[in-house]
Image (cartoon, rainbow, N blue to C red; front, side, top):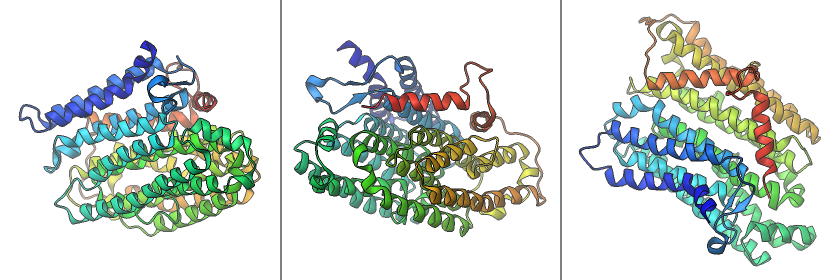
Length: 495
Protein backbone atom coordinates (compact mmCIF):
# COMPACT_ATOMS: atom_id res chain seq x y z
CA UNK A 1 0.00 0.00 0.00
CA UNK A 2 2.81 2.45 0.92
CA UNK A 3 4.62 1.66 -2.32
CA UNK A 4 1.47 2.33 -4.33
CA UNK A 5 1.05 5.70 -2.61
CA UNK A 6 4.66 6.59 -3.46
CA UNK A 7 4.12 5.60 -7.09
CA UNK A 8 1.04 7.83 -7.36
CA UNK A 9 2.77 10.91 -5.91
CA UNK A 10 3.77 12.28 -9.38
CA UNK A 11 0.15 12.27 -10.58
CA UNK A 12 -1.19 13.45 -7.21
CA UNK A 13 1.26 16.38 -7.19
CA UNK A 14 0.03 17.51 -10.62
CA UNK A 15 -3.68 17.43 -9.76
CA UNK A 16 -3.08 19.12 -6.37
CA UNK A 17 -1.06 21.81 -8.14
CA UNK A 18 -3.85 22.32 -10.68
CA UNK A 19 -6.44 22.76 -7.91
CA UNK A 20 -4.21 25.15 -5.96
CA UNK A 21 -3.55 27.26 -9.05
CA UNK A 22 -7.25 27.34 -9.86
CA UNK A 23 -8.04 28.63 -6.35
CA UNK A 24 -5.28 31.23 -6.50
CA UNK A 25 -6.03 32.40 -10.04
CA UNK A 26 -8.11 35.39 -8.94
CA UNK A 27 -5.99 36.36 -5.97
CA UNK A 28 -4.48 39.82 -6.38
CA UNK A 29 -1.47 38.80 -4.29
CA UNK A 30 -0.35 36.36 -6.97
CA UNK A 31 0.85 37.93 -10.19
CA UNK A 32 1.14 35.97 -13.42
CA UNK A 33 4.87 35.66 -12.84
CA UNK A 34 4.35 34.12 -9.40
CA UNK A 35 1.69 31.74 -10.67
CA UNK A 36 4.02 30.64 -13.43
CA UNK A 37 6.76 29.94 -10.89
CA UNK A 38 4.28 28.05 -8.71
CA UNK A 39 3.11 25.91 -11.66
CA UNK A 40 6.71 25.07 -12.58
CA UNK A 41 7.38 24.25 -8.91
CA UNK A 42 4.58 21.65 -8.81
CA UNK A 43 5.78 20.18 -12.10
CA UNK A 44 9.37 19.96 -10.82
CA UNK A 45 8.20 18.21 -7.65
CA UNK A 46 6.30 15.71 -9.78
CA UNK A 47 9.36 15.27 -12.01
CA UNK A 48 11.55 14.59 -8.95
CA UNK A 49 9.16 11.85 -7.76
CA UNK A 50 9.19 10.34 -11.25
CA UNK A 51 12.98 10.26 -11.41
CA UNK A 52 13.13 8.61 -7.99
CA UNK A 53 10.58 5.96 -8.92
CA UNK A 54 11.58 5.18 -12.49
CA UNK A 55 13.05 1.72 -12.90
CA UNK A 56 12.27 0.89 -9.27
CA UNK A 57 9.14 -1.14 -9.96
CA UNK A 58 8.00 -3.84 -12.34
CA UNK A 59 4.61 -3.74 -14.01
CA UNK A 60 2.06 -3.57 -11.24
CA UNK A 61 -1.55 -2.48 -10.89
CA UNK A 62 -2.35 0.51 -8.71
CA UNK A 63 -4.58 -0.27 -5.71
CA UNK A 64 -6.06 -3.44 -7.27
CA UNK A 65 -8.51 -3.90 -4.38
CA UNK A 66 -10.09 -0.54 -5.24
CA UNK A 67 -9.53 0.02 -8.95
CA UNK A 68 -8.96 -3.55 -10.14
CA UNK A 69 -6.63 -3.40 -13.13
CA UNK A 70 -7.75 0.06 -14.30
CA UNK A 71 -4.35 1.67 -13.70
CA UNK A 72 -0.96 0.12 -14.35
CA UNK A 73 2.49 1.27 -13.30
CA UNK A 74 5.38 0.33 -15.58
CA UNK A 75 8.44 1.92 -17.15
CA UNK A 76 6.48 2.49 -20.38
CA UNK A 77 4.05 4.84 -18.62
CA UNK A 78 6.86 6.40 -16.58
CA UNK A 79 8.79 7.42 -19.70
CA UNK A 80 5.70 9.10 -21.11
CA UNK A 81 5.04 10.82 -17.76
CA UNK A 82 8.54 12.28 -17.93
CA UNK A 83 7.89 13.67 -21.42
CA UNK A 84 4.53 15.16 -20.41
CA UNK A 85 6.01 16.85 -17.34
CA UNK A 86 9.10 18.14 -19.12
CA UNK A 87 6.91 19.34 -22.00
CA UNK A 88 4.72 21.36 -19.61
CA UNK A 89 7.77 22.82 -17.83
CA UNK A 90 9.31 23.88 -21.14
CA UNK A 91 5.98 25.34 -22.30
CA UNK A 92 5.76 27.53 -19.20
CA UNK A 93 9.43 28.58 -19.15
CA UNK A 94 9.93 29.23 -22.87
CA UNK A 95 6.68 31.21 -23.13
CA UNK A 96 7.35 33.34 -20.06
CA UNK A 97 7.81 36.46 -22.20
CA UNK A 98 4.83 35.65 -24.41
CA UNK A 99 2.13 35.47 -21.76
CA UNK A 100 3.49 38.62 -20.10
CA UNK A 101 3.05 40.46 -23.40
CA UNK A 102 -0.58 39.34 -23.79
CA UNK A 103 -3.11 40.83 -21.40
CA UNK A 104 -5.75 38.16 -22.02
CA UNK A 105 -3.80 35.53 -20.05
CA UNK A 106 -4.94 34.94 -16.48
CA UNK A 107 -4.28 32.52 -13.65
CA UNK A 108 -6.46 29.65 -14.84
CA UNK A 109 -4.14 29.26 -17.85
CA UNK A 110 -1.64 27.51 -15.58
CA UNK A 111 -4.33 25.38 -13.93
CA UNK A 112 -5.54 24.21 -17.36
CA UNK A 113 -1.99 23.25 -18.37
CA UNK A 114 -1.65 21.09 -15.24
CA UNK A 115 -5.11 19.55 -15.65
CA UNK A 116 -4.15 18.62 -19.19
CA UNK A 117 -0.92 17.00 -17.96
CA UNK A 118 -2.94 15.13 -15.33
CA UNK A 119 -5.21 13.73 -18.05
CA UNK A 120 -2.22 12.70 -20.17
CA UNK A 121 -0.58 10.94 -17.25
CA UNK A 122 -3.80 9.09 -16.50
CA UNK A 123 -3.93 8.08 -20.16
CA UNK A 124 -0.43 6.62 -20.11
CA UNK A 125 -1.30 4.54 -17.01
CA UNK A 126 -4.79 3.51 -18.18
CA UNK A 127 -5.28 -0.24 -18.46
CA UNK A 128 -9.00 -0.17 -19.06
CA UNK A 129 -10.89 1.47 -21.93
CA UNK A 130 -13.40 3.57 -19.95
CA UNK A 131 -10.54 4.87 -17.80
CA UNK A 132 -8.60 5.70 -20.97
CA UNK A 133 -11.62 7.55 -22.38
CA UNK A 134 -12.05 9.63 -19.20
CA UNK A 135 -8.33 10.45 -19.17
CA UNK A 136 -8.41 11.42 -22.85
CA UNK A 137 -11.38 13.72 -22.27
CA UNK A 138 -9.76 15.39 -19.25
CA UNK A 139 -6.73 16.21 -21.37
CA UNK A 140 -8.81 17.16 -24.43
CA UNK A 141 -11.24 19.46 -22.59
CA UNK A 142 -8.31 21.39 -21.12
CA UNK A 143 -6.79 21.72 -24.61
CA UNK A 144 -10.12 22.91 -26.07
CA UNK A 145 -10.27 25.69 -23.50
CA UNK A 146 -6.63 26.64 -24.06
CA UNK A 147 -7.04 26.80 -27.85
CA UNK A 148 -9.81 29.40 -27.47
CA UNK A 149 -8.14 31.17 -24.57
CA UNK A 150 -7.96 34.47 -26.45
CA UNK A 151 -11.74 34.83 -26.40
CA UNK A 152 -11.74 38.25 -28.09
CA UNK A 153 -9.89 36.86 -31.11
CA UNK A 154 -12.29 35.56 -33.76
CA UNK A 155 -9.71 33.18 -35.26
CA UNK A 156 -8.98 31.67 -31.86
CA UNK A 157 -12.65 31.21 -31.02
CA UNK A 158 -13.31 29.66 -34.42
CA UNK A 159 -10.40 27.25 -33.94
CA UNK A 160 -11.73 26.21 -30.52
CA UNK A 161 -15.23 25.54 -31.85
CA UNK A 162 -13.95 23.52 -34.80
CA UNK A 163 -11.63 21.46 -32.59
CA UNK A 164 -14.24 20.94 -29.86
CA UNK A 165 -17.02 19.82 -32.22
CA UNK A 166 -14.84 17.48 -34.25
CA UNK A 167 -13.02 16.24 -31.15
CA UNK A 168 -16.31 15.47 -29.40
CA UNK A 169 -17.49 13.51 -32.43
CA UNK A 170 -14.35 11.38 -32.50
CA UNK A 171 -14.57 10.95 -28.74
CA UNK A 172 -17.99 9.42 -29.35
CA UNK A 173 -16.33 6.93 -31.70
CA UNK A 174 -14.00 5.91 -28.85
CA UNK A 175 -16.84 5.22 -26.41
CA UNK A 176 -18.87 3.47 -29.14
CA UNK A 177 -15.90 1.25 -29.89
CA UNK A 178 -15.55 0.55 -26.18
CA UNK A 179 -19.22 -0.50 -25.99
CA UNK A 180 -18.81 -2.88 -28.93
CA UNK A 181 -15.68 -4.41 -27.40
CA UNK A 182 -17.56 -4.85 -24.13
CA UNK A 183 -20.32 -6.61 -26.04
CA UNK A 184 -17.78 -9.02 -27.50
CA UNK A 185 -15.51 -9.59 -24.49
CA UNK A 186 -17.80 -8.86 -21.55
CA UNK A 187 -15.16 -6.53 -20.08
CA UNK A 188 -13.30 -3.33 -20.92
CA UNK A 189 -10.15 -4.43 -19.09
CA UNK A 190 -7.12 -4.59 -21.38
CA UNK A 191 -6.10 -7.83 -19.68
CA UNK A 192 -9.41 -9.49 -20.51
CA UNK A 193 -9.33 -8.11 -24.04
CA UNK A 194 -5.84 -9.53 -24.59
CA UNK A 195 -6.95 -12.96 -23.34
CA UNK A 196 -10.00 -12.87 -25.62
CA UNK A 197 -7.86 -12.01 -28.65
CA UNK A 198 -5.39 -14.82 -27.90
CA UNK A 199 -8.08 -17.46 -27.36
CA UNK A 200 -10.25 -16.76 -30.42
CA UNK A 201 -9.84 -16.94 -34.17
CA UNK A 202 -9.97 -13.83 -36.33
CA UNK A 203 -13.28 -14.91 -37.87
CA UNK A 204 -14.89 -15.00 -34.40
CA UNK A 205 -13.86 -11.46 -33.44
CA UNK A 206 -15.89 -9.33 -35.86
CA UNK A 207 -17.50 -7.24 -33.11
CA UNK A 208 -14.16 -6.62 -31.37
CA UNK A 209 -12.48 -5.66 -34.64
CA UNK A 210 -15.24 -3.18 -35.48
CA UNK A 211 -15.02 -1.68 -31.98
CA UNK A 212 -11.24 -1.39 -32.04
CA UNK A 213 -11.46 0.20 -35.51
CA UNK A 214 -13.70 2.91 -34.04
CA UNK A 215 -11.07 3.52 -31.36
CA UNK A 216 -8.48 3.74 -34.12
CA UNK A 217 -10.52 6.54 -35.74
CA UNK A 218 -10.24 8.57 -32.53
CA UNK A 219 -6.48 7.99 -32.41
CA UNK A 220 -6.06 8.95 -36.08
CA UNK A 221 -8.00 12.18 -35.49
CA UNK A 222 -6.00 13.16 -32.43
CA UNK A 223 -2.66 12.74 -34.22
CA UNK A 224 -3.93 14.54 -37.33
CA UNK A 225 -3.63 11.65 -39.80
CA UNK A 226 -5.22 12.10 -43.24
CA UNK A 227 -8.21 12.04 -43.86
CA UNK A 228 -8.89 13.07 -40.23
CA UNK A 229 -6.61 16.13 -40.48
CA UNK A 230 -8.94 18.95 -41.52
CA UNK A 231 -8.70 20.66 -38.14
CA UNK A 232 -4.93 20.66 -37.69
CA UNK A 233 -3.70 23.72 -39.58
CA UNK A 234 -6.62 25.97 -38.57
CA UNK A 235 -6.50 24.97 -34.90
CA UNK A 236 -2.72 25.33 -34.66
CA UNK A 237 -3.05 28.71 -36.37
CA UNK A 238 -5.84 29.97 -34.12
CA UNK A 239 -4.39 28.82 -30.81
CA UNK A 240 -1.97 31.09 -28.92
CA UNK A 241 1.67 30.19 -29.59
CA UNK A 242 2.25 28.47 -26.22
CA UNK A 243 -0.78 26.23 -26.77
CA UNK A 244 0.26 25.37 -30.32
CA UNK A 245 3.65 24.37 -28.96
CA UNK A 246 2.05 22.30 -26.19
CA UNK A 247 -0.31 20.54 -28.61
CA UNK A 248 2.29 19.83 -31.30
CA UNK A 249 4.81 18.33 -28.90
CA UNK A 250 3.29 17.08 -25.66
CA UNK A 251 -0.36 16.29 -26.45
CA UNK A 252 0.46 14.42 -29.66
CA UNK A 253 2.86 12.19 -27.70
CA UNK A 254 0.08 11.37 -25.20
CA UNK A 255 -2.05 9.81 -27.94
CA UNK A 256 0.75 7.42 -28.83
CA UNK A 257 0.90 6.30 -25.19
CA UNK A 258 -2.49 4.60 -25.46
CA UNK A 259 -2.03 3.65 -29.13
CA UNK A 260 1.18 1.74 -28.44
CA UNK A 261 -0.24 0.03 -25.36
CA UNK A 262 -3.23 -1.18 -27.37
CA UNK A 263 -1.45 -2.29 -30.51
CA UNK A 264 1.65 -3.73 -28.83
CA UNK A 265 -0.19 -5.80 -26.24
CA UNK A 266 -3.93 -6.14 -26.65
CA UNK A 267 -4.32 -6.29 -30.42
CA UNK A 268 -0.84 -7.64 -31.18
CA UNK A 269 -2.06 -10.91 -32.70
CA UNK A 270 -4.63 -9.24 -34.98
CA UNK A 271 -2.60 -6.19 -36.07
CA UNK A 272 -2.20 -7.78 -39.49
CA UNK A 273 -5.93 -7.12 -40.06
CA UNK A 274 -5.31 -3.35 -40.15
CA UNK A 275 -1.98 -3.52 -41.99
CA UNK A 276 -3.27 -2.54 -45.44
CA UNK A 277 -5.61 0.13 -44.06
CA UNK A 278 -2.78 1.65 -42.01
CA UNK A 279 -0.54 1.64 -45.06
CA UNK A 280 -3.14 3.57 -47.07
CA UNK A 281 -3.63 6.09 -44.24
CA UNK A 282 0.14 6.46 -43.90
CA UNK A 283 0.57 7.16 -47.62
CA UNK A 284 -2.25 9.74 -47.56
CA UNK A 285 -0.81 11.37 -44.43
CA UNK A 286 2.71 11.69 -45.85
CA UNK A 287 1.49 13.10 -49.18
CA UNK A 288 -1.34 15.25 -47.78
CA UNK A 289 0.79 16.70 -44.98
CA UNK A 290 3.60 17.56 -47.40
CA UNK A 291 1.15 19.30 -49.74
CA UNK A 292 -0.32 21.35 -46.91
CA UNK A 293 3.11 22.36 -45.55
CA UNK A 294 4.36 23.45 -48.97
CA UNK A 295 1.35 25.70 -49.62
CA UNK A 296 1.51 27.72 -46.38
CA UNK A 297 2.78 31.30 -46.15
CA UNK A 298 2.66 31.62 -42.37
CA UNK A 299 5.51 29.80 -40.62
CA UNK A 300 3.16 28.64 -37.88
CA UNK A 301 0.82 27.03 -40.41
CA UNK A 302 3.79 25.46 -42.21
CA UNK A 303 4.89 23.79 -38.97
CA UNK A 304 1.30 22.67 -38.41
CA UNK A 305 1.22 21.06 -41.85
CA UNK A 306 4.60 19.45 -41.27
CA UNK A 307 3.35 17.97 -37.99
CA UNK A 308 0.94 15.91 -40.10
CA UNK A 309 3.93 14.54 -42.03
CA UNK A 310 5.62 13.55 -38.77
CA UNK A 311 2.44 11.71 -37.79
CA UNK A 312 2.89 9.83 -41.07
CA UNK A 313 6.42 8.80 -40.11
CA UNK A 314 5.12 7.51 -36.79
CA UNK A 315 2.36 5.61 -38.60
CA UNK A 316 5.06 3.84 -40.62
CA UNK A 317 6.31 2.50 -37.30
CA UNK A 318 2.79 1.57 -36.17
CA UNK A 319 2.10 -0.37 -39.38
CA UNK A 320 5.48 -2.09 -39.04
CA UNK A 321 4.42 -3.38 -35.62
CA UNK A 322 1.72 -5.52 -37.15
CA UNK A 323 4.13 -7.01 -39.66
CA UNK A 324 6.64 -8.38 -37.18
CA UNK A 325 9.30 -5.66 -36.98
CA UNK A 326 11.34 -5.88 -33.77
CA UNK A 327 12.79 -2.41 -34.33
CA UNK A 328 9.43 -0.65 -34.77
CA UNK A 329 8.41 -0.14 -31.13
CA UNK A 330 11.70 1.39 -29.88
CA UNK A 331 11.93 3.34 -33.17
CA UNK A 332 8.55 4.96 -32.45
CA UNK A 333 9.62 5.83 -28.90
CA UNK A 334 12.89 7.33 -30.16
CA UNK A 335 11.11 9.31 -32.88
CA UNK A 336 8.67 10.71 -30.32
CA UNK A 337 11.64 11.98 -28.28
CA UNK A 338 13.32 13.41 -31.40
CA UNK A 339 10.17 15.18 -32.60
CA UNK A 340 9.43 16.43 -29.10
CA UNK A 341 12.82 18.18 -28.83
CA UNK A 342 12.63 19.69 -32.32
CA UNK A 343 8.99 20.82 -32.09
CA UNK A 344 9.42 22.40 -28.66
CA UNK A 345 12.47 24.32 -29.87
CA UNK A 346 10.99 25.57 -33.15
CA UNK A 347 7.65 26.64 -31.69
CA UNK A 348 9.51 28.10 -28.71
CA UNK A 349 11.47 30.44 -30.96
CA UNK A 350 8.29 31.48 -32.78
CA UNK A 351 6.69 32.22 -29.42
CA UNK A 352 9.69 34.26 -28.28
CA UNK A 353 9.62 36.34 -31.46
CA UNK A 354 5.83 36.71 -31.29
CA UNK A 355 6.11 38.09 -27.76
CA UNK A 356 7.62 41.21 -29.34
CA UNK A 357 5.11 41.38 -32.20
CA UNK A 358 1.34 41.39 -32.59
CA UNK A 359 1.18 39.90 -36.11
CA UNK A 360 1.38 36.35 -37.42
CA UNK A 361 4.83 35.68 -38.88
CA UNK A 362 5.26 34.91 -42.57
CA UNK A 363 8.42 33.72 -44.27
CA UNK A 364 9.08 37.33 -45.32
CA UNK A 365 9.18 38.44 -41.68
CA UNK A 366 12.30 36.29 -41.26
CA UNK A 367 14.26 38.15 -43.94
CA UNK A 368 17.67 39.02 -42.53
CA UNK A 369 16.86 37.35 -39.21
CA UNK A 370 20.43 35.98 -39.10
CA UNK A 371 21.73 39.55 -38.97
CA UNK A 372 19.13 40.74 -36.51
CA UNK A 373 19.28 37.73 -34.17
CA UNK A 374 22.26 35.60 -35.28
CA UNK A 375 22.18 33.20 -32.32
CA UNK A 376 18.43 32.67 -32.55
CA UNK A 377 18.81 32.07 -36.29
CA UNK A 378 21.41 29.37 -35.63
CA UNK A 379 19.10 27.62 -33.16
CA UNK A 380 16.11 27.89 -35.51
CA UNK A 381 18.24 26.39 -38.28
CA UNK A 382 19.20 23.49 -36.03
CA UNK A 383 15.53 22.73 -35.31
CA UNK A 384 14.60 23.00 -39.00
CA UNK A 385 17.46 20.66 -39.96
CA UNK A 386 16.34 18.17 -37.34
CA UNK A 387 12.72 18.26 -38.50
CA UNK A 388 13.94 17.70 -42.06
CA UNK A 389 16.02 14.73 -40.93
CA UNK A 390 19.43 16.24 -41.71
CA UNK A 391 22.47 14.13 -40.62
CA UNK A 392 24.09 14.98 -37.27
CA UNK A 393 20.74 15.83 -35.70
CA UNK A 394 18.45 13.68 -33.59
CA UNK A 395 15.77 13.97 -36.28
CA UNK A 396 18.00 12.10 -38.74
CA UNK A 397 18.42 9.16 -36.37
CA UNK A 398 14.68 9.15 -35.67
CA UNK A 399 13.87 8.82 -39.37
CA UNK A 400 16.64 6.26 -39.83
CA UNK A 401 15.15 3.95 -37.21
CA UNK A 402 11.61 4.40 -38.57
CA UNK A 403 12.67 3.59 -42.15
CA UNK A 404 14.70 0.63 -40.87
CA UNK A 405 11.57 -0.78 -39.22
CA UNK A 406 9.66 -0.36 -42.50
CA UNK A 407 12.33 -2.21 -44.48
CA UNK A 408 12.55 -4.94 -41.84
CA UNK A 409 8.79 -5.51 -42.11
CA UNK A 410 8.91 -5.61 -45.91
CA UNK A 411 7.24 -2.22 -46.46
CA UNK A 412 9.70 -0.99 -49.08
CA UNK A 413 7.11 1.31 -50.67
CA UNK A 414 6.43 3.09 -47.36
CA UNK A 415 10.16 3.41 -46.66
CA UNK A 416 10.72 4.88 -50.12
CA UNK A 417 7.79 7.28 -49.79
CA UNK A 418 9.02 8.33 -46.33
CA UNK A 419 12.47 9.10 -47.73
CA UNK A 420 10.88 11.02 -50.62
CA UNK A 421 8.72 13.15 -48.32
CA UNK A 422 11.81 13.79 -46.16
CA UNK A 423 13.50 15.22 -49.27
CA UNK A 424 10.37 17.26 -50.05
CA UNK A 425 10.41 18.65 -46.50
CA UNK A 426 13.83 20.12 -47.23
CA UNK A 427 12.04 22.66 -49.42
CA UNK A 428 9.78 24.21 -46.80
CA UNK A 429 12.24 23.89 -43.91
CA UNK A 430 15.24 25.23 -45.87
CA UNK A 431 13.04 27.97 -47.30
CA UNK A 432 12.89 29.48 -43.81
CA UNK A 433 16.67 29.10 -43.42
CA UNK A 434 17.16 30.82 -46.79
CA UNK A 435 15.02 33.78 -45.75
CA UNK A 436 17.01 34.11 -42.53
CA UNK A 437 20.46 34.04 -44.14
CA UNK A 438 20.17 35.21 -47.75
CA UNK A 439 18.41 38.53 -47.19
CA UNK A 440 19.75 41.69 -45.51
CA UNK A 441 18.22 43.14 -42.37
CA UNK A 442 17.35 46.80 -41.86
CA UNK A 443 17.89 46.56 -38.11
CA UNK A 444 20.89 44.36 -37.32
CA UNK A 445 21.11 43.44 -33.65
CA UNK A 446 24.03 41.27 -32.57
CA UNK A 447 23.20 41.12 -28.87
CA UNK A 448 21.81 37.80 -27.66
CA UNK A 449 18.86 38.37 -25.29
CA UNK A 450 19.61 36.30 -22.20
CA UNK A 451 16.62 35.24 -20.12
CA UNK A 452 14.98 31.99 -19.08
CA UNK A 453 13.28 31.56 -22.49
CA UNK A 454 16.42 31.85 -24.60
CA UNK A 455 18.50 29.74 -22.21
CA UNK A 456 15.99 26.88 -22.38
CA UNK A 457 15.77 27.14 -26.19
CA UNK A 458 19.59 27.02 -26.43
CA UNK A 459 19.61 23.89 -24.27
CA UNK A 460 17.05 22.26 -26.58
CA UNK A 461 19.22 23.07 -29.61
CA UNK A 462 22.24 21.46 -27.95
CA UNK A 463 20.19 18.36 -27.13
CA UNK A 464 19.08 18.09 -30.76
CA UNK A 465 22.73 18.08 -31.89
CA UNK A 466 23.85 15.82 -29.04
CA UNK A 467 21.08 13.37 -29.88
CA UNK A 468 22.51 13.12 -33.40
CA UNK A 469 26.24 12.91 -32.75
CA UNK A 470 26.63 12.49 -28.98
CA UNK A 471 28.58 9.74 -27.27
CA UNK A 472 28.66 8.30 -23.77
CA UNK A 473 31.69 10.37 -22.78
CA UNK A 474 29.54 12.56 -20.53
CA UNK A 475 27.84 10.04 -18.23
CA UNK A 476 24.94 12.18 -16.99
CA UNK A 477 23.77 13.14 -20.50
CA UNK A 478 22.18 10.26 -22.44
CA UNK A 479 23.60 9.48 -25.88
CA UNK A 480 21.48 8.32 -28.85
CA UNK A 481 22.24 4.70 -27.92
CA UNK A 482 21.05 5.43 -24.38
CA UNK A 483 17.77 6.83 -25.77
CA UNK A 484 17.24 3.61 -27.73
CA UNK A 485 18.07 1.52 -24.66
CA UNK A 486 15.52 3.51 -22.64
CA UNK A 487 12.93 2.95 -25.39
CA UNK A 488 13.59 -0.80 -25.44
CA UNK A 489 13.39 -1.00 -21.65
CA UNK A 490 10.07 0.84 -21.57
CA UNK A 491 8.61 -1.36 -24.33
CA UNK A 492 9.85 -4.46 -22.51
CA UNK A 493 7.92 -3.47 -19.37
CA UNK A 494 4.56 -3.70 -21.17
CA UNK A 495 2.24 -6.55 -20.30
